Length: 289
Image 1 (cartoon, rainbow, N blue to C red):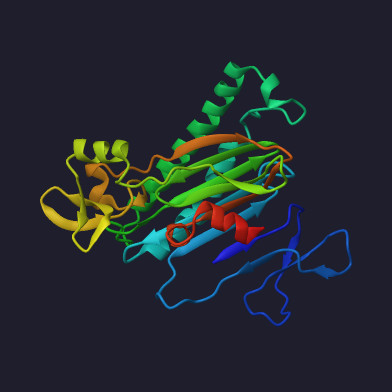
Image 2 (spheres, rainbow, N blue to C red):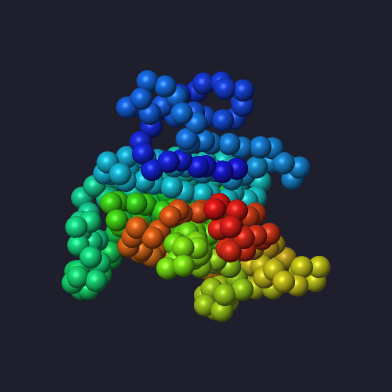
């Protein structure tokens, strides 16, 4: 499942041009329809698709964008991923409307006072941390939804003018495509895959009483287990939901980072581990370009 859209704002119209899953966008400055943005999904052979994705234009400011990919897992993973997708944008928006710009679009990022930039970024970071915490708590309070062994990852990117703020929870990934001096496009990873194989993540889990072990048939995949039970075997170290493991080191606190956009930044690619397990960052960039 993927989303591709232009940098301009367009009004969505459900018009059938021969492709059931293709959405066309109307250019408000043009009387016709142009196939310049699309949302497309296709059923594969793996079974139920538990992923959700969103792209929200005009978010906060005129050229603002909220984009996010959510990889559900467990029996109710598809429900959790959709819940997070629906709740997180509006919750974050309440915070960011009152937040200062990290850098001014008219300033060179090198000219901005570093302490002021860090102070503003910390306010954004706190907004993300608070919003993720609230969403996780709301999911836990849903009596009719069992999320003891179900949850979702989240990788979210918000653009406000030249500011790009990225929050990552789990093993999905954000990669920027940047033009080099030679004119080629190189991948710039904006997130770190948060898995039990990371020493810092494994240390936190073990300090909380959880176990980090790989199955004999999958020695390359570290998983998180309860202290005295061979369950549930979670392959990520942070997630919404998965409340069975929340007392044993699994947390819903995202890694939040900042990137100042420049004219060399060509595109942003967000994807779940279903992509990154089979394609490298370089391969993804070559496919997009």
